[in-house]
Image 1: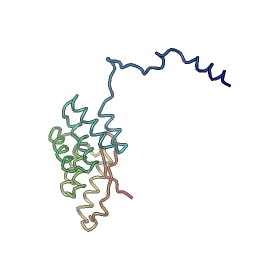
Image 2: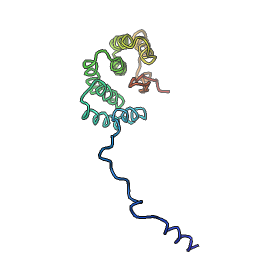
Image 3: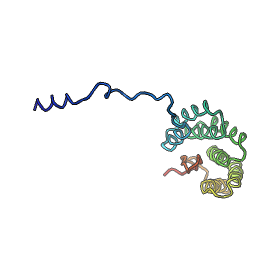
Image 4: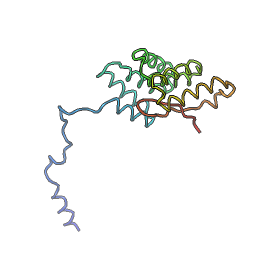
Length: 174
């Protein structure tokens, strides 16, 4: 049995084969926005925020990056920071429905139902009514406006749920 172990140890190749691969200086890094969106989907909002911050260093503070950073802050319950970023995003690109939708999600979270409904209406119009997530968020905002009795703290336990293309909807926790 000792011979078999020694024989297998001699077949290890050169030490160069055991070294980690080198870095390709011409290689392309990962797209930080894609990485951040994957981290958001996994609920890793702090790591996603770091990834979006790195993307901002490369691309600047675009509406997409502002929206992504705002949504990550929303996931972290940093509502003041999230609102500032999301309002900047809709100001930078007032025709992008995703930014408007995510601002509406924040407004529902803060209890600003009438403004949330207006924001969702705008997002829905910009999206030509094609997004189920925006429609569902609009319905939720309108329901909250019409029935304020059901707006107790216990019933407002929601989580962000990614719908695609950076859009989020609120899903009630069980």
